[in-house]
Image 1 (cartoon, rainbow, N blue to C red):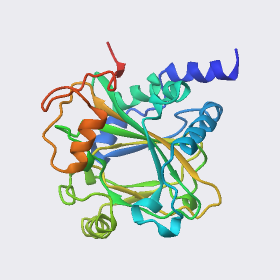
Image 2 (image 1 turned 90 degrees about the vertical axis):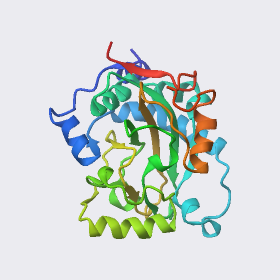
Image 3 (image 1 turned 45 degrees about the horizontal axis):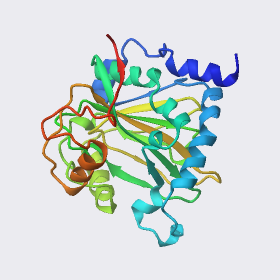
Image 4 (image 1 turned 120 degrees about the vertical axis):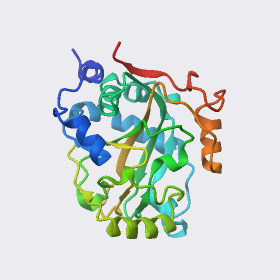
Length: 276
């Protein structure tokens, strides 16, 4: 059996590293950091392809010094699974989707979209924000996988979370920006939410809820901080009326042909894991 065959098999094999309290911890904290979600060998099979696709599809060509705060945070390429069959194997991995379903406590999850997020050397902070500001979804039964494609020490700006902040309503009207950074940084401190900042070993991954406030430091390393993310939805989750133009765009781009109040069931939103 080749290394590639072993990697593909791993993606379809259930993850056995969830502690017994994982779902309860996730509900309490709004996130979880897991070790050994994938082996370094499996990540090595996919990282070059993802990086190649990011280079090919990236549309941000301004020098770092000429970008705004959001532009300095990372290069962002979305829905790589629609561009490359090998990347699709990773995005559609039953192992990863199964973890998401267990953490959410649901019987099945479907794909919302993927995003490659590459923080360049000398790239800036990722401001405090909550992902669900951008999503026209009827509840927070959704989760983001954050999978680094290299070891990520503190100097490279790993993702960090405000523990328990998914139950905090302030700041949910803020897009990622200098304003969200200032206001949420103050709010996190005032509410005494723990700012959990940890390095990620190769093969580690985190999962966080849609309303969990999170951020990342600058990349002070000499190599890009390469990350693949996948957003999963409870398979029964319905859309809701957009409250900002970003949600309107998301509805059109990621859930086409889905009416308000419906479950997104287009080919762009397939079920990736079902317990039945």
